[in-house]
Image (cartoon, rainbow, N blue to C red; front, side, top):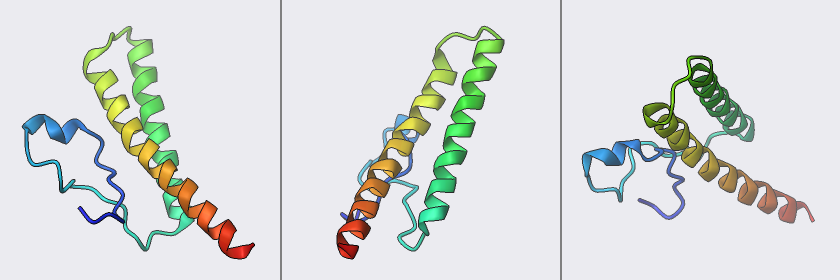
Length: 94
């Protein structure tokens, strides 16, 4: 994986025991800040939906928790990227 690429794959694909050096999903370097924030919103909305279904149906742990954690892993990487990106933008304007 290129050092500039941001891995957005979560971790569930790693269950197959494949080479994890080239993740299947990476951030498009030309994606706008708005598109990245919209992606974050979608991930949060989906994780929230999964958690609500589990709560309403009294489902414990297992697959729902794994799905939410996998999305949060990718979301955390995106937010770290956006923090660096906006810090660099702010430094460039200073």
